[in-house]
Amino acid sequence: MCRRPASPTDSDNASDDSTDTYIQIVTSGGRRIPVHANILASASTVLENIIDRPRKHRRSERTIPILGVPCDAVVVFVGFLYSGRCTDEDMEKYGIHLLALSHVYLIPKLKSQCTKALIQRLTIENVVDVLQLARLCDAPDLYLKCMKLVSKRFKSVEETEGWKFLQNHDPFFELEILQFIDETESRMKRSRRHRREQSLYFELSEAMDCLEHICTEGCISVGPNDMVPRKKKAPCNKFSTCQGLQLMIQHFANCKKRVNGGCVRCKRMWQLFKLHASICQLADSNCKVPLCRQFKIRDLKEMKNKKEKERWELLVKKVVVARATSALLLPKRKRMEEEAEGEPIAAACGEANHNHNNHIIRRLVC
Image 1: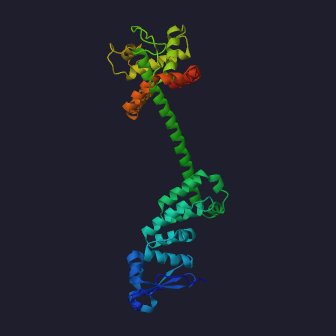
Image 2: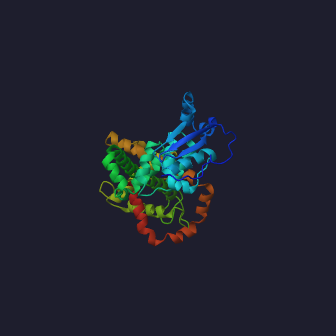
Image 3: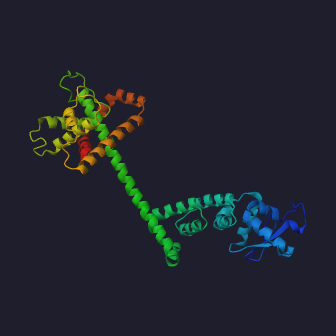
């Protein structure tokens, strides 16, 4: 049985008592709610078409049945047609029913409010039911939010009665949800892999800057042969990478095995020289990085096969893009501040960073 709550049409505000201005809404509990026909027609084109059809028949037949939802939900729905508002309490109790009514009778404003309210009230227990409703009512924002929650908390959702009911009665929708979860996990894996790759390219870009800096200006322990060593040597603003490169250069200069002998560290240093030559835009006479001219002359002819050459060219392209991106992301003022803060950086990057620096360089070309 339905109680009789206050109805927007129960007031004495009607300007015309003629039965032509009223229509009866019949609920599942048998409740009849008198409403102004022009209010319904102006709020919904669907209701307008329903109202226009009975005019061919007797006036006593002018009723609109709204069944399948609680009587009080219909009262709230009618109240929204008059006022354009719903309270939080109404949304808490009848949000699901109001979403269905707003979809059936094409009331976008109510549908938007219901969608936002249901998103805020999503739980593990109700997410499957709300997901099914969002699918039926064409509510993409709510549908996506439910799917994300199911994907994130799938083990908990599996234990709910809603999921068990879905498995027994709608296996195709269950498959759709599982496919979404699988695609989400695949996207996350691709995203993590992409971030790792981008991190590597930025590290290689930084290594190229440090290599040019060491061979052109000199740093703590390594510098160009034609430059008089500075009396007071302060570390650069990329000291963590620069120190590791200096250690590798010192090893490369003194190692007797070299590349042909199978020294892994020398091979990595050789690859860094080669990468520099691939991205260097300076004339041969102006570039002070060792082996730059030799690698430019060889021009990748030593590549064993086409795939190897393509991989190398792709690596060079990625590093060039990373260098350009780094230059754009780092404002000029910040670069100047970092250069001025060379002394504090030296204090922070002491002997304790030795193993960390070697780790960075090992990652550069592996």
